[in-house]
Length: 260
Image 1 (cartoon, one colour):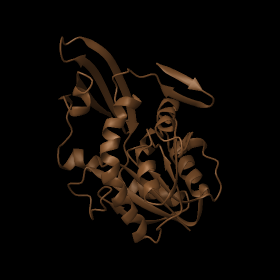
Image 2: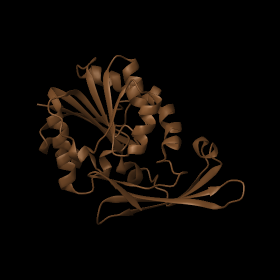
Image 3: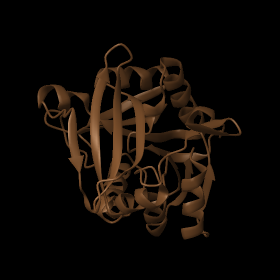
């Protein structure tokens, strides 16, 4: 089921889903303090030490908070109003707004844009991918950097890590008294991954919610092609936020593009 707000459509999710801000914050609050120093080092490697930065698809804003602590003028945007409200209530002094990457209309505003945690994969068509990347290009200042990060499909193919079914009883689930049964599949015609998550209470096994999403998969050469078509020079493709060289065995892909 979906709800529409303005020009943006987003899923009405179960209150137990990881997409729920309260659930999302558990993981993001843990990851952001580890990832932001690595991202700052990556930015420094390409000549950006301070300045204004956009986190597109910021979720509940934990990365924006960490960047702000390090002296960046960080803004966070997300298409889900619930996550933005959650972030604004936690950090009213910081800059957050509801925004759709496909409709970003800023011009030469940012020194760097981050689109991490598999946000780009919600562009379904080639046209949407290219439009989003062109929006990022227009929003960057001259020589500005774009960092995009997502799952590495070769990890599923080469390392055979793809699981059709599994059960998640992680800390963020147990905090809500839940377990989650995953059913995963791929659609080769659309080059997408399909994930169905069914939520059960731990105390009585009662089903309390279902969440389904379908997201695009990007291969490295394909990602480079799209970036170049949008006007970027591709400075590097790495195995995740840590800047690991080479994609063999890497679960994630991170690409750095520079506005010419």
